[in-house]
Length: 445
Ligand SMILES: Cc1ncc(COP(=O)(O)O)c(C=O)c1O
Image (cartoon, rainbow, N blue to C red; front, side, top):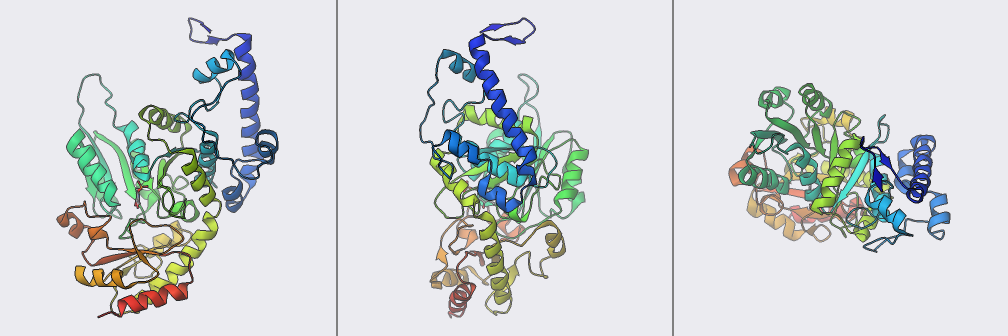
């Protein structure tokens, strides 16, 4: 390939042929998104994503669902095609750390769902876990802008968050890399966010509803604040999923997910995803991931993609079951301080009604003490004592000694994560059976 001095690339006719073919494909795809997908309802996009009848017939032997491409590398027709691919002149997949057809369909489906009803384009980069998604999402904002100069950097994050996130921010970023994490204990207090921003702030980060305390805040208000300082807002929307809340539409810039949870929904994969409303930023994140490498395997992507096809149906049932169980718990004397955004007693219930379409499948309550919590979780027969959430089966856990054990006790106390807190991930079984199971467990002496 020869290069013009003004950086415009002059390519050989052999390479140009591939560029033209691929440009035709991209035009067809963008037109399909604009003319067809943008007019489809959320539930239809969840099932079909970007996989068309034409894709199935022309490219995949008529396979009615997206095939799994386990191959680590792609073979090329000739050196021209290879050269065009390696120079990123054509969108092929090349090598599975760089891209993969199964991954492609999964990422597009999630990008379209998070971007549903949103005017701009969205892009998605899948990762090997939810933690990898969080790390990859914050990374572009932490780079030093001056050569060989250590710059003061800080960011703001909701203190009520998943224990792994707490550890990533407070240990990996703050202690080991010198990036100050300024924890926001009450995210509903916009002045608290505003007063912690200074010229070294790089981004704002929030998890909601937070795992496990159901912390909540006004995404639009925090996004407006972030943007008034030229900063991005990153939201961990794992617990809500795009069925219940779409943070990009409310002004957030990046959404991260643990795909391990509701997106996959069947507790058989670890995965994550980053969806960004700015395609350039999305590309930057993807580039960085290609080099650092925490990519998901194609089979894992396919499992999440399969899960997403039923996400809207599952979330509806998770919400219905959780609402009934939350009401049951409120009426049981052994369950104190029931935390669920769907309850009128939740401090942000009214905001949750506006910001969510359904209140999710996670509930927490206080069993009174560590010992009582242990008795309850040992006494259920359907709710399994396990980490994680968001699967079709119901799980029960004691966050203080499980998912949030890495959060120091004094911090747990400050953010309302008591020793007796029990977290339920309500599955899609019969609510009657789940209530009977909890009744039995809570009635134990
Ligand atoms: C809200 C939230 N974000 C992120 C994560 C991390 O996801 P993963 O376990 O897929 O790395 C979790 C895991 O429980 C979570 O609950």
